[in-house]
Image (cartoon, rainbow, N blue to C red; front, side, top):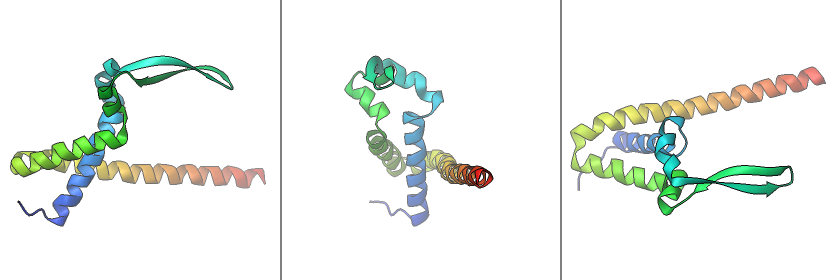
Length: 124
């Protein structure tokens, strides 16, 4: 089996994270998820809400973060082991995007916390 450096391993983790997020959450891949989803009406305390739920097992794969994460790890890890030179380009791009999205999430949450605390300070 091929030895994988720590840097490549971290890049594979970040790339798998970003690919999973792309499949499960991003608007740009909604057209892939849509055929496997159905809308149902759910009664809540505030009235009737329409929710989108998976219509099949494949729909669950596309909406479940944990499921899609396993398959994206298999895809990227396996592709890297079989075709390292070609796959490395995709891993590099997805890992940069994955690291950037983690940083952006951290910064965004902290900006919201700062705004929240400044509003609280103004009220008091």
